[in-house]
Amino acid sequence: MKELTLRQIEVIRAVMITGTIQGAAELLGVSAPGISRLLKHTESGLGLRLFERKAGVFVPAHEARAIFAMLNQVHRQIENLNSAVTALRKGEEVTLAFASAPSIAQFIAARAIRAIRQRFPDLMIDLNILKIEETLDYLLLEQGEVVFMSSALDNPAVENLPLVTGRIVAIVPEGHPLAAQRDVSVHELVGYPFIGMDPSDPYGAILARAFSDQGLVPRHTMRGRFAQTMVSLVRHGLGVAVIDEFSVAEVYMPGLVRLPLRESASITAYAVLKKGRQITSFAEFAIDRFRRELTAATARQNWDADRLLQGKN
Image (cartoon, rainbow, N blue to C red; front, top):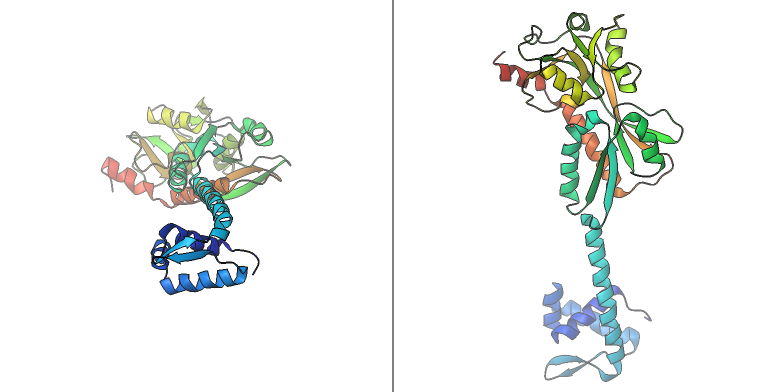
């Protein structure tokens, strides 16, 4: 044997610190005979005497003092390396930058970030809320690693990773004539003041598809730029709307009733990445958590909670 292994270095240092085979064994949490055998094997392999036994205590041999000085340096470096690894596992001095569309940021982002924080308690998280037209620059200029969107981004420089497909649902104010129903048709919704979004907007086009598939064109009495705006307008009794279920994923939303559409209408959430960019393990974990939270949101039966809130069956 010409080279020391990390295990041998660990054992030699333990014997040096404690002065006994038994002490080294207790320090390392192993058996004393195992320490004794490894020490003898190490000395034999190196062709050197590392310790002298004086009054029952192991002390470094005179000829091996230079080796022990270097062993201490190596051990300190190993400790520094382990500290660096531990810090990285916790996310110390690391920033995870990502962005989200407003509809996903409303409730899903906070839940995902809570899980990310539990896994990496010291990770710095930089969350941006972006409109779809801001997404491309954000990714290509590498201001962040991933953007969570409610529609795909049509550009060859990015990759759209589908996460979860959810439902388009109707929202009406509490006390509205439609609020007592189990579900609602888009044919019924067009009979009331309707709050929508510009159908030329990708997200707005997804919402409008629920009507266009039925040959309907809803007349907007007002429009909102973001999902949160539409929710607020409906909650204040200014009309009815359709929206993605991720935007209304809280169990209790006072003033608002969510209703399933009788017609089939869906929306897919995406993780949008710069094509060819190698993302960090932190970003990979974030994508997984967003997928989990989005999936959980689609599985929740919020309709019954709404009925209970209003005292209805």
